[in-house]
Amino acid sequence: MGNIQQGLANLKHFIKIAPEAPGVYRMLDENDVVLYVGKAKNIKKRIVAYSHFDKLPIRLQRMVSQIKRMEFIIVENEAKALLMENELIKEFEPKYNILLKDDKTFPHLVIDVTSKFPSLRKYRGKRQDKNKYFGPFANATAVNSVLDIVQKAFLLRSCRDGVFNNRQRPCLMYQIKRCSAPCVGKISEEDYKILVKEAIEFLEGKNTKLQEELSKQMNEASERLDYETALVLRDRIKALASVQRGNNVEYADIKSVDMIALVRKNNMVCIQVFFIRSGQNCGNAPYFPKQIEDADDNEILEAFLSSFYSEHIPPKEIVLSQEIENKEFLEEALDTHINTYQKGNKAHIINMVKANAEASIDRKIAEQASVKSNLEEMVKWFDLPRIPQRIEIYDNSHNQGSFAIGAMVVATPDGFDKKSYRKFNIKESDLKHRQEENDFKRHLEASAGAKNAATQPQKIINQDDFLMMKEVLLRRFARMTPENKPDVILLDGGLGQLHAVHEALKDYDLSGIAIIAISKGPDRNAGKEFYHQLGKESFSLPFQSPIAFYLQNLRDEAHRFAIGTHRARRAKSISKSKLDEIEGIGARRKRDLLNYFGSVEEISQSSVKDLQKVAGISKKTAEKIYNYFHF
Image (cartoon, rainbow, N blue to C red; front, side, top):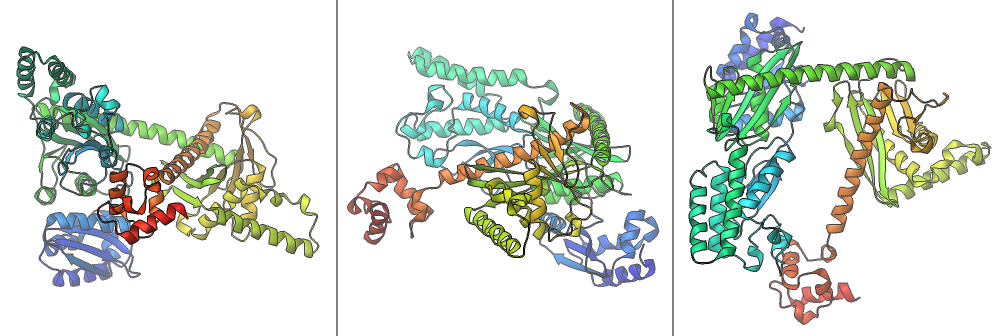
């Protein structure tokens, strides 16, 4: 603990000059390291609480004793204070703030109501426009289920605008009665807007009279012998009925609520969130906040709400398992209602959420015990100085040298640290440069009387896989800091990869870093892999042992990440148009050309005169396009 009296004196000095306005405050130590970031409706009143030293928990007492100075940012209202606080916490990761490191974005459904024929699609990320958003859903399975129902019931298109604008005949979605095919005029704009309105009402839980109205329309269609329309309406009614049958009675009257419960057990805190929308449980997710030493439940829950809803759209009501101190501030900032219940249906549901939180802690403890046991086994088998806190696993992926990707996955005692994953795009020029380096070094070694090059293990890095691994490791170590230094490097490969990495990193201090390569066993049999370390005899672990499964899981995660990244890069390259390479052709002209001609192939075969028929394409631009394809 620092100098308590000096820290309190510094704090009281800044209390005198603190603004009485909404905003964000930062506490910094003598090295200008940010200790804490907080928000307040009235900054001065908020930081006065820190001057009551004896009432503070030990964690905050330690923080106050280290305060050298404070910084203040005044904002317009509570909502902006909330957003700015979370931006600063993410930027500085202060040691005294409670961190939600395992946060993620959830899938939503979005209807682009600004379009002439709005589409219904899955969406991830923050709400950034005036479209209608529905969710969140806890996972892709939940959102796909609702999407399937809405497509059957309301026949909204799900295609992108580029596809929609260029269709000349209905797609498969129309054939299987999942779309009304507005792209080819199978439905009028007015009738389509009615479908959009009904879908929005359904997703917002306002669909109580919808089935009655659809039944009436179906009977009217039957009476006028329009059996095709009657069948479509019948299928829509069946889809809506299936939703209502699947609804849990407990959630029937709940339109837009997040149920959030905090449970503390065995020095661990879990916050469980249930998403309930339009009478349906859209799934749940557990969270395990970091840096909670000496923090009370109120502080943890408030920090969670601030962080979580800076990334997600708040519902109309948030139900908590317990009261929080700054309820009014958060209600104004989030534009929602925050409540607790002691009896009734919502009290029953929040108790169920608490039970799920406790079960999540039990699973987490069991997982951590298993991981700890495997890490202890690693210490024994690989002669490590201590239990590794950071394991980096590397793998490469490419298609005959094209779209080459290097991938790094990070594992800790708490599991995979996905925010630390890294991908490395590798160009052909990078490999050529590394090869030239290798050739030059071997030339110098030969000139200096080195041993016959054929006996040098690093010569095998002539192959692309070894060059790629060398490129990746050199880039990684160039940015290594004491904070992210690995204890173990795990390579998917054999002795060749091991020697390639050691040769690449010979100018770096590798003390305290164990480099291990995993090669496939006989007949590439999983479970019979060989493990290699420089200067040690290769060996295999006991077949189907827990430590063998653990290391296979680490390797497989790196392989999954590498393959996924490689496929994404390849798909992006495939979707890139030749028009992107023509100077003066931006996104708008590209769209207009494709809308007019239908494809790049048609554009390439068009004359200058035909190209000029497109709005915005001058004679000079048309000549550029023509010359690109013909000269």
